[in-house]
Image (cartoon, rainbow, N blue to C red; front, side):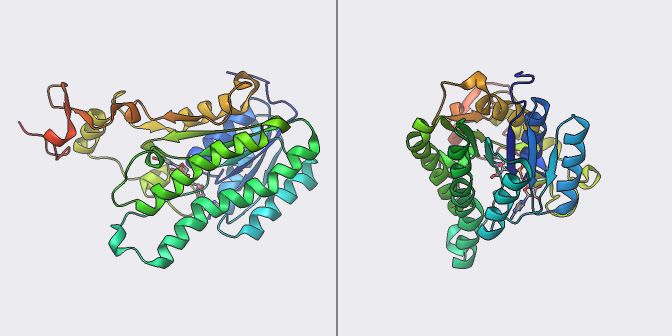
Length: 289
Ligand SMILES: NC(=O)c1ccc[n+]([C@@H]2O[C@H](COP(=O)([O-])OP(=O)(O)OC[C@H]3O[C@@H](n4cnc5c(N)ncnc54)[C@H](O)[C@@H]3O)[C@@H](O)[C@H]2O)c1
């Protein structure tokens, strides 16, 4: 899809060293973009840069902690210095730890907000002037979550941040449309990545990823209409569509990349494959016989 459509463009991907960010970086490089990989793990930046190079594009590994707004600004300034332009910003880095809100400390709220929201504001604020200066428009792609559109017990602050991202996404689409800058988001549900497989630090190493049990597979298959978890490359393709000319009249949208999970609301399949409301079926891992 969109082969060659991004030739000559420069994209910066936060958290581009692993998981969904890596898949987006490689999809954009496959369509011709040069890539700045702004990930906190230097080895991950280097690995993705090497893969981008194999695709024939220029890559700039740029170790960056998005929780530090100075580092974000520095990464974007480096992209400008090295490539002289910035056409695409992918705000992907973000994350969560599970805890009931009543047990969550103020320090943890603030960490979540810095990671998921302040980083978004800082990167957007630094990137937009470069796009406007270039006079060629641009594209911003925000990686939100299904949790930004529904209640998310154990993930209250994360869900609030992603809901904030969703409305920031829409508002930026309005504020930036007259510059030809389009702003869109993808909203994944459960996607197999290093982060969801226990590989949260160091290089990406699939040999240490934990594997879901058969019961967990079964629960996923019954909850998600397409009957499986997502893979990061599916987010990569959706993101590519939203930053490429193929979506030239789309801005302010939030595209679920979730196998139909958002559409399914509270419905799950029972063991016989029949759709039932989840409230009638409370323990997905231990279905009634
Ligand atoms: N995987 C899912 O199931 C899922 C579902 C919905 C939304 N999301 C969202 O997708 C995005 C990516 O998630 P993922 O599952 O690919 O995560 P991941 O942990 O697999 O990969 C995230 C990447 O970001 C990097 N990173 C971590 N902290 C960073 C920091 N402070 N600064 C810069 N880089 C940092 C990591 O090194 C890693 O390479 C997140 O915003 C997440 O909320 C993921």
